[in-house]
Length: 71
Image (cartoon, rainbow, N blue to C red; front, side):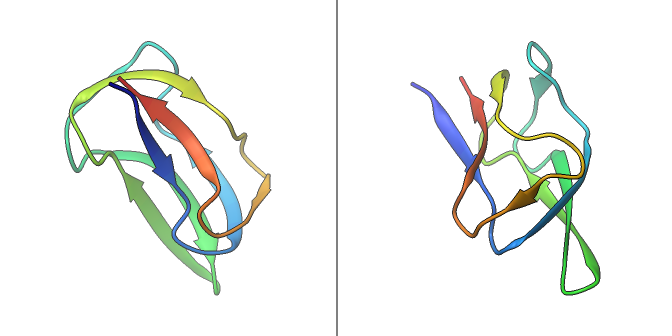
């Protein structure tokens, strides 16, 4: 079953740490975003394989926007 990774708040994507096909462990950093002049690490909610990354570095995102999908 697929699990989505969502932005916790409005911000900008700084870097993508994990790409499609990469294995991730629960609580491993996948994406780093900037919000309120702070770097916020976005971690994997589950262990699995990255199936889709829906954002790119430099992209503005909204709260609860889907950033990636893990299976």
